[in-house]
Length: 97
Image (cartoon, rainbow, N blue to C red; front, side):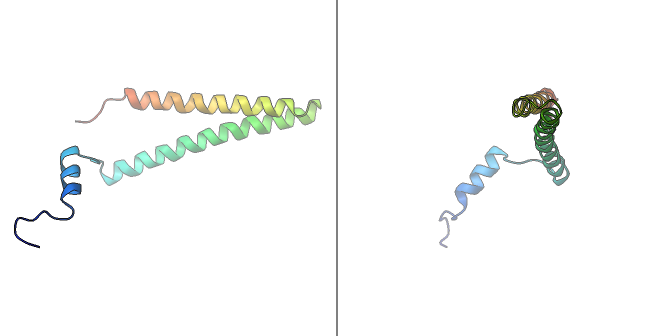
C-alpha cells in the first residue's frame, strides 16, 4: 500500500468511529439479549396458555373450535400488551450518557 493511499477499511472505520455504533459492555449486551429472549418467550407462552385454556374449555363445553380461536386471540392480545408495556418501560428509563 502506498503512503497516503486510503486503507480498504477506511469507510468502515470512519463510520464506526463517528457514529458510536455499539457502546455496550459485554455484560450489558448479555443483559439486553436475555431481556429480549425473556420477552419473546413471554409472548409465546401467552399465546400457548390462551390456546390451551381455549382447547380445554372447548372439550369441556363441546363448543369446538370457538373457544380455541378466542383463546388464541386473547393470548395474542395479552402477549402484545405485555411486550408493549415492557417496551414503554425501557423507552422511559433514563439513558446513560
